[in-house]
Image (cartoon, rainbow, N blue to C red; front, side):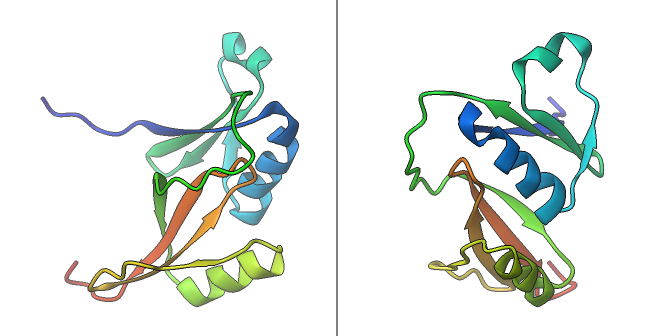
Length: 126
């Protein structure tokens, strides 16, 4: 089987929808793309990331504190500048508690508690 990732889905409670859309659309600078007509009434948003998509869905009943290490990883060209952008937006930076050789990274949580890894490769050989 030749499988290719099409999208990743993260969920937030309905009460945090606007805050999550601001987080992904403004703070992370993702481009929102139209959802299919039959999906629009469910709330959330879809964002295009190169060949992949991030789907933000509404899921009520989530706990306020989601300490899970489940995450999506985003690679960036300038980790220091990205960290400053998050700090400037008031987003808490969670340090890397398990360093991986060849990578520099930190974590953040979106308004729904989803953990995001923000990483930069430290070598062209990776």
